[in-house]
Image (cartoon, rainbow, N blue to C red; front, side, top):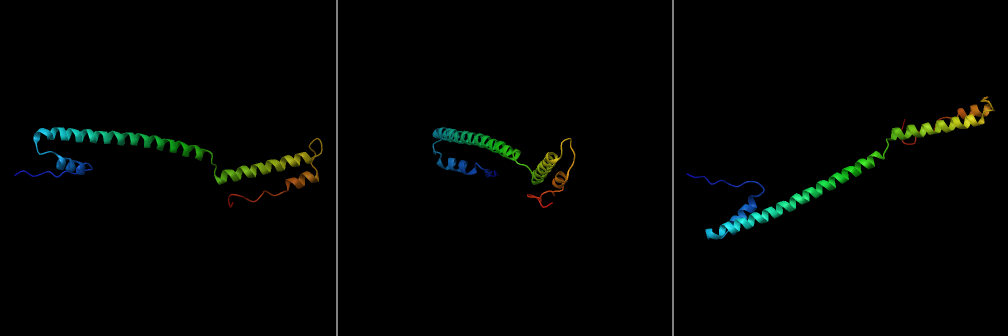
Length: 124
């Protein structure tokens, strides 16, 4: 007793359609199935090209994303840089207020006593 194998997979529908459309005359069935194979290969090549295009586009998007991320800094790093710039400017102003020879005076000490600014981007 011969069991009929049921076709499975993504090509099941197209194989069944090809079988239903096949001519009854065995002489023309070969031509019909070859035409179906040519159509299938054409579709496969179109999909392969589309996959290649999509992979190239994905790689371009990944590179763009990496570039954009490389331009970003964390809030912590930004806050540290901001505080460092303020401290440098405060010390430079204090040095400019000192008497010649680096003699400290009240004005330079008042500048050094200016408190650090409150955090702008973090809650530290």
